[in-house]
Picture 1 (tube, rainbow, N blue to C red):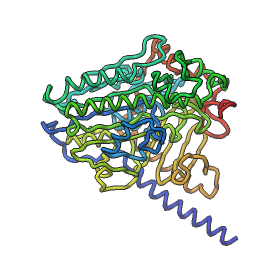
Picture 2 (tube, helix red, strand yellow):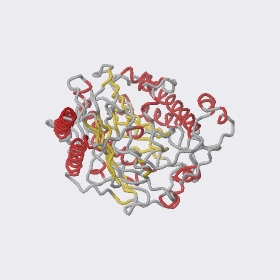
Picture 3 (spheres, rainbow, N blue to C red):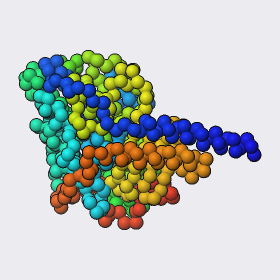
Picture 4 (cartoon, rainbow, N blue to C red):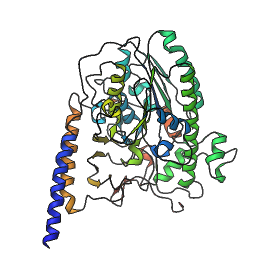
Length: 503
């Protein structure tokens, strides 16, 4: 009995010490600011930010996948710095990309909202500054190629971009602009704006959408990666509005839509996108821009294939949705390496400013990754993530080897250092109460500090009937179409039912 009580006391003490470390590590939500740097000089690097929608980190060979889906991205990783544990701040596009482009947390920039919620969908708060505004104000040419409505000018993500090539799908069209056309347009923009033409460096965002629903890879990728039943010339499209409504109501037709088939089609989309990323990078090389360009490749979020009993994204804060790839290549300064330290999307903005030698915005809440990239620091950075598009609104904090998820009156706690798949919830274990309390306090403190400087309400955004139809054609369905789905099941955070026939 004494030994048992002693073990409990030791565990409580360990939790207390760990809690102190978590609180200290979560203290900072502001970027490191030194004296203002001069405006972009003749030697200032270009910045190419490649954003791949809905790309799971574990689908990349450089993150351990052995299917051979991403040889071009793997090659990029071998030439730069790969962050093994990088995380987004939301499980769907609008709030995640807003954090990436403003270096602020969702609770600060306000972009997001939820289907069916009283406030509806919201755009970027008017009092935060974007990376494009920052670089444009320092003399950079700024441009973007965007392929989803949630990143359209309506939501404020175009602020600071001189060129903003946004193309929504045509009405009832189920596939956005393909990666091939995106690459063609990106190469044309680069040819026009490379330094030899304009005399100025550029900040250029290229957004690929293909891994997102609906999954319909080009024929040769479908034939290579899809299961035999899905290799026909006139394939059934998976992930349509009808399919998603059926899944969210737990009435998915197992003969038509087993998720195992879906994941193979998703793999084909990932491989196709990788090919086009390779074309883009080859173009950068042919233009002689390799040494003068910082290339960043990342994703806004991942995709779930029943990892926790659900499908798609925007419904949980488990790692299959918020663990994202992050690669930075800049041969002038960065040697190839892998970084194990935990980092966040909010750190990307200050990092790019630091590498470019320009002063970041006063509203930035991240910290430059330069100390980590150059081996001067190996410390983890606490990751605060928020928001859902479907189901209950959630918040998570990942710090000290643990991860806390709260929302809808529930709490989940995982020791992710030893349980990376988040299978064993410790929240109900009395011996872990001290740790749970410490994590909760750290989360509350970080949320409070992240709010400083603004109200975080975001801008009210109304979508037209036509815009809603375009989103529904891509598989987005509103709360009124999710009859019988609460977003909670069996005490866990999830939003879809598992088809009985799943292999």
